[in-house]
Every structure is written in C-alpha cells, then in structure tokens.
Image 1 (tube, rainbow, N blue to C red):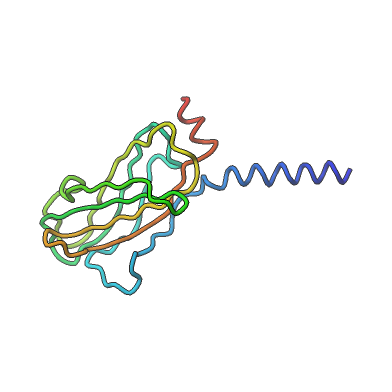
Image 2 (cartoon, rainbow, N blue to C red):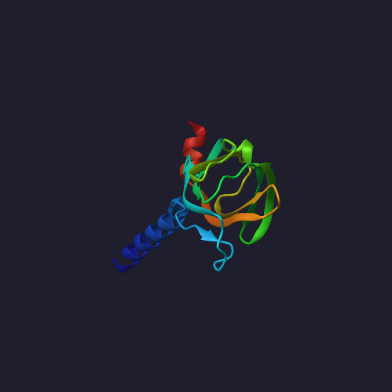
Length: 156
C-alpha cells in the first residue's frame, strides 16, 4: 500500500513540475534598480499565454512617460537558461504611435517563435532609448513556453 501511495505522489509531483512553466509572467524588474528611468513600466500582457511555438505572440507593455517622446529605439534581448539566444532592434514609432505624449501609453511587440523552440522559461530584456541615445527605461521579465498546453493549442 505504501509503495502505491509513493508512486501516486511521484506521479503528482512530475505532473506539477510539467505544468509549473505554464504560470504567467508577473514580475517586472528594472535593469538598474537605482536608476530613475524617464519611462515607468506598470505591466505586461502576453497573448496567448503560455506562448505557443509557431504561432504569433504579442507582448503589450503598459508604461508612462514624464515627457513627450518623439522617437527612438527599442531593443529586445531574449535569454534561455542564462544564454543569450535572440536580439532585435526596432524604431519605437513602429511599436506605438509617435510622438508619445506625457502620460500612459502601450508598446506592442509581436513575434512568432519557431516550431522547434524548446519549452521552458525565458528572460526578455527590453531597453528603450530616445533619439539622443538616452536610456528611457530597461526592464526584464520571465515568460514561459509550456510543455503541455502549447502542444494542445498548436494542434487545434
């Protein structure tokens, strides 16, 4: 009887470990905790979540600016288990309407990950600079590509 209970416990733990990467990314960290960035990030929405390989994913970043931003650059870096795997640089005005007025705004970035992308936890770092290369903000957060749910959604 104890062996059966032990096997059930092991099965439950394995199942939970496979589902844990499906948790939503909620922790946003500034790259430099002591910096006073001109752009403050208030939240991130990832759709769909968990991220589905081979399907477009949109990262919508809610932020606020203290002053008008007329343009600049958005740099996105992605790491997997600490190894840098991807980098992209875009014009801010291609991700939101410019000029960005002082106050709240949203930057949206869509990306389709290849079907062979391994499941697990990734770290995305986003840096925003104005036209004079002044760093407006720098954040990082983790997101997951699911083991189970992504396969089911990808097949539908």
